[in-house]
Amino acid sequence: MSFGFARLIQICICSLVGANVLLPAPSFALAPKKLAPIQNCAGAQASRTREEYEAEQRVIKKGESLMRSGRLQEAIEYLRAELAQNPRSAVMNFELGNAFLRSRDFTSAIERYQQAVRLRNPFPEACLNAAYACMDAGMELQAIPWFHKYLRENPNSERAKDVEAELLVAHAKAQMKEKRNFDAKQTLERALQIAPRSDLVLFTLARVRSELGDTQGAIRAYEEILQINPKHSAALINMAECYQTSGQLLQAVSWLKKYAAGNPDAKDIGQIQNLITALTEKSAEQKSDPQALDYAGSITESGRFYRWPPNRLPIKVWVSQGEGVAGFKPEFRNSFFDALNSWMKAGQGRLQYVLVEAKEQADLTAEWTGDPYDVKPTGHNVEQGVCMLKSVDRGRNFVEIDRADIRILTIDRNNQQPLSDDEMKKTCLHELGHAMGLQGHSTNNHDIMFFSLSNTNWPVLSKRDRATLFMIYQHYRPLVSVQQ
Ligand SMILES: [Zn+2]
Image (cartoon, rainbow, N blue to C red):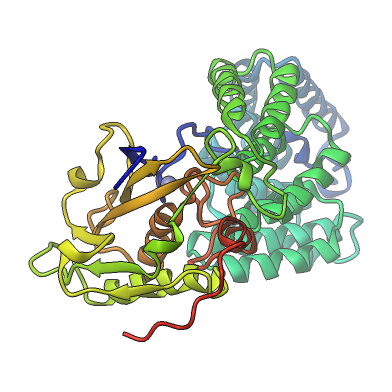
């Protein structure tokens, strides 16, 4: 006999879904301040008259002054016209290359630098700027021989250390493109030993740490960049992204505000303002500190937990064999039981389950589907699984779980491919967490119960996941191990 009322809750099902708010892609561009200053080149031009040399210097000066005042197109046209008169001038080719680089016409810039080096070899500045133009164009592999050439010809230059580090960055970026992020990280750590205060090295290292899921490490690298250059706008944006990923939304907002204050005319400023509003609203929904030992505050409703009452233990479980379900693999059932056993272990003997033969006998059921629509009951969420919980409220300090029905999508809804075993295990862990009574989401991206898509959690329960589950059931008597 039941005193209370039963109700069906649909737990928000955002296991492994995209975050509601996305940050714009970070920018990678090298600042044009890297342009090597032009050196006095009289020595290399000994065969020319003094008049010719002085005329060339006047052209260079005028070109530079146009560039400095931001009149890039004018500078390009002026230098082009002068170069037509004097096509053998290495320095004018170099200067025109700089104008192209500043206007982000990388192909033309590289052509001019190549021509400059043909006319006057060695020409260290042209060589280096050719490397930077390749880097800016995203052609790291083409940059590498230019860096090597510079280092071969200028082993004792005061820039040599920086250039050596930049060469390693080029290698690391090429490795990142091949998804060899761990190798890239090691390459960048070597670069950092050579040039510990290089913002290029630090920035790239932060990106690769993010890719590897080391959000805290990425944050440390961005902090160092911002100590060196507090206005580094890409670092400000990416810092916000790191805090967003780790669920610390107010921190994310504060970094976005710093970016907005420093870049009021930025093209993306409208988008950033919207993001600030969205994250501020979302943070108001958060109830717990992502660094606390558990996230009890996030999974209670008016201070009350959901849990299986003692008289329903061991939980009667039935899992579908998945016959005829598109994308189903028998290994998925193993993932499910691994996940279920992980939660049982977290309960330290206080939670147990038994398998039952028929679905009708079960209190916890799990079924598979190849149709994304089946796990989309709310119509707008994009998810890999759903846990429907039926509860009974008897007016006590906790709400009794009456039954839980889980449905899991066998294919990745983004690319329609079968889910990898790791992704399946994460989905099972997350939905089973809801089924055990964790009615809500963690704000820490290392927890399996984190509220949105994250490549930063592993297919295992975090310490906080385990602590939160244990907190719910800690006063239960440990049960004798149940054999099936
Ligand atoms: Zn969820």
